[in-house]
Image (cartoon, rainbow, N blue to C red; front, side):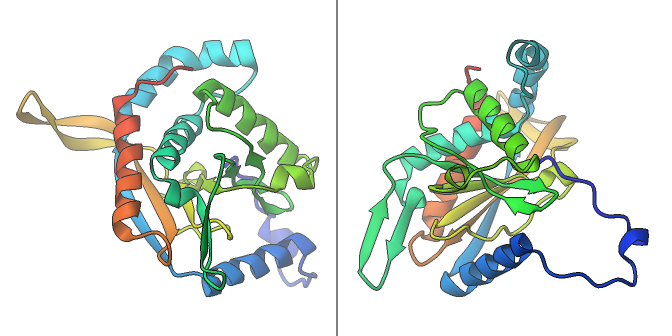
Length: 246
């Protein structure tokens, strides 16, 4: 989310630099995740036109009142929280050596943030009962702290599920890597307005809609493909219904 500008090629061409500690940590954790779990990615397409209508009506007043942006992301996070409550296996951890599955007692949502130092994943703790508006404020606060270098270890600890918004830089869909020991991560693609076939009262027509791909990478050792499909289907239905309180 909230991408930072890349370093101009003219400033780094022909030079050599040390790998930063943050970059080394990211690289180590990504390889550990891929080598330590059986990762698959499932993708669905969601019509966010109902969310667009809510945002058009509420976003200016929300920013004036709360000083935060009402983007699509908090709606998606809220829908994901409700799906985690419906499908707790996606909000679990597994220890195969001990033969134990541990279901998280809360929904602690990591939000991937692109910072000048590299990718960080601060956590919104105990997000289960938070409204869309509260989630939006939390995303703004933790994202700001991460980009300003004010994030603490406590802010980064305890996540049970992660959301990454690679669509903020135009990517339609990707295969995000799980933030272990979590067993799943949700990626949100770019919003694209395009014509699709819709069914209105039994009649098929072509309409222009706000469409987005959502991709769920999951650890197939614990989460079955059917579980992943049902989880994504729950999010899709929730977002397309558009019944959210800010």
